[in-house]
Image (cartoon, rainbow over all chains, first blue to last red; front, side, top):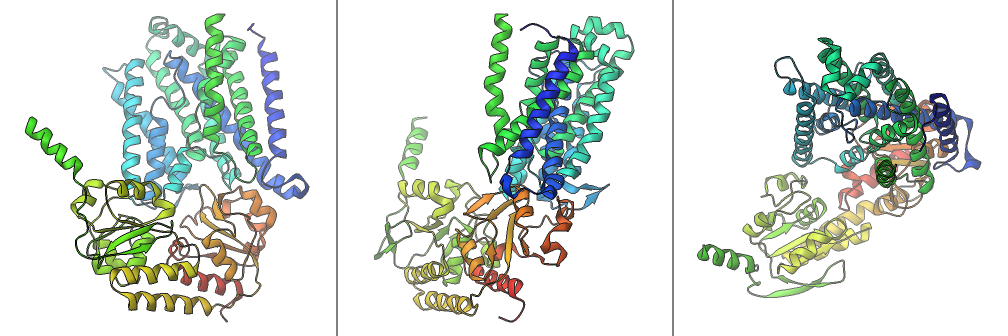
Length: 320
Length: 280
């Protein structure tokens, strides 16, 4: 696969995102003949926006973490964000925290805090004498993720609570009845983290080359790593707190984007943001078109479609 | 080591004691004839609904074990626990039950498992008030409380008859908020809501739906049977819904609607009242 100029790639994915969004506006439980402007305005358009924003967050976070960790398997949830968010969400469900916090619903707020808390904990645990080796960060994130996952199981069983709600959350769900609210939670997270990543796009290039070249960043290196970790975690936590765990998007998108436009993060980041949005909008349209009336869980769709596609991309790399 | 292995072997092969004394056969809801000791003295119930039915039928004192989900009637909470959604075989075995009662709908796997281990398993699957009454009668008979079982059944049917079926408003019933879970008319709950006089805007059985379907059908009444009321007004188009404008969004206790037990008659009465107003 030849590299293509940034503008072409961006246009390509913008067109794909537009097509997927248009398609997604036309499919759903309500047949086209019964579709009203109110349903489009109140539900379908905000819903399509939410899919784009969450996909974009996952794409941005994936790119950031794959560079930061110099690891092709890194995804938005690599530092334990998803485990921490799941723990926060389930704890709020089981303990019955239904109150509103700063305009956020109890579960959303708890999940967001849990996700960021996990990342921060991983960062603190991995820090030795003012330095944070990425390997330690990766391991600490993995351990925290597994630990939170185990706590989730305990809480669910001990709380005698509805599995329904918890399982729905763990499978990822874009079909919430309040897409506008969720989009309003995701947007600032995406905006903030994308701005930090864009500001440090050159530094991401250096980090990707290894600790030695990152040393060129001098004493700034640790500070920058911390900021990028925060940026990737905020994007991931925003996505996971509003729509549950949607896997594979954050893993595949950076790989596809890198194959298309190369590893320079000044190009890679915007392309991954748009591609992530396009991919999730497409998966969402498929999930609703394939099972009208009762949409398939979006996390399952992205995994089923994503795993083979990921293998395909991986094989391409080997061959070429 | 040899002795330990032998002990394990013996333990592994040990089946529950064959019922001593007289047994009587009862047909359960999967059509199987189950030999029940007369009377059973140590009954284990594997589902909240069967626990409730056993207590209603008068067999509460014979219940030896329940799940952690069995919270009704309150006396059930103090019974020894044999697991949650997963049956703790060791705990169950320690109770040496002579009868296991479970719900066929939710406990199929466990029922077959325990049967393979030699337990007498009686599976219930009532899907209407008549069948719930039938279950009460059978449970009463098999546990030596024929009179109380039949009385409970009569009382249940009388409460059901007190609600006259007549046409009422269109409605949407929500038992889970995330994901959005509801039922169409084809479940026991769906039939109860129909009997209460409502016209369900959703078709089919238990299902997860998209919110836009509710927006499109714009029901006259919305019944919410979960505790996630927070965030309802953030829902798309919420304030434009007929039910919201007319103040006909009602919160109902989930436990009166989701279990196929006599409490469902309470749900029937409540739904009828909400559909038609107080006058029965």
